[in-house]
Image 1 (cartoon, rainbow, N blue to C red):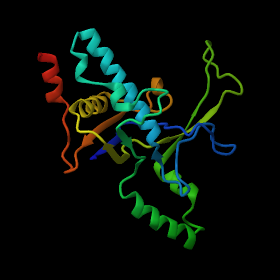
Image 2 (image 1 turned 135 degrees about the vertical axis):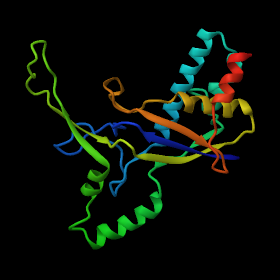
Image 3 (image 1 turned 45 degrees about the horizontal axis):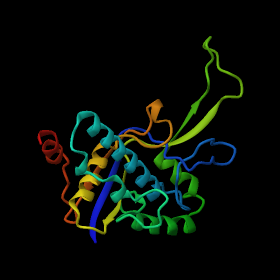
Image 4 (image 1 turned 120 degrees about the vertical axis):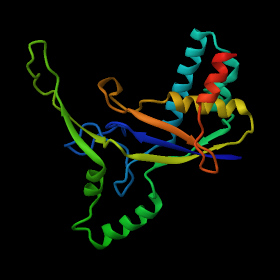
Length: 218
């Protein structure tokens, strides 16, 4: 088993949605734990990276680059099949998540008047409101929507484990990370710009540029 670290930095506000709202105030909300700390689910990361890898495959096809240098199904698994893929993703958390979570758990119990679930969420997020505008520039009635987004600049990290020594799989993952530029809801509205990088077990940043140069000059 080979261990790697995946890190995502938010280059802009991001709506990594939970698929539900929050009470009567928030129509679309983010994913956070029971204390209010935001995180990115592993399943979401795997889906986004697979989509990024599919885009790479399409680019290779158009540019007539050897597509055998990557293998999407071998890396992420075949849809509908029971056999698991050799690549395993953890949830992505804020730096020092476990330590901060332990402290916040203590503080929310001892000082519940001052440190609350809602205040923790507020520290990492911003509230935006949007409404639909008709062709005359007038806001349509009953179209006001309130969304909560993660603040620009936040970093999330987690483990990636590869149960294989095949270079093909690591290359596929590395190129997918390189192409992974946006995630979350409202990506076509400017939300969710990110940078995604991969580190090896020695914390060395893996660079996709040499691989791309090799593929493009073959």
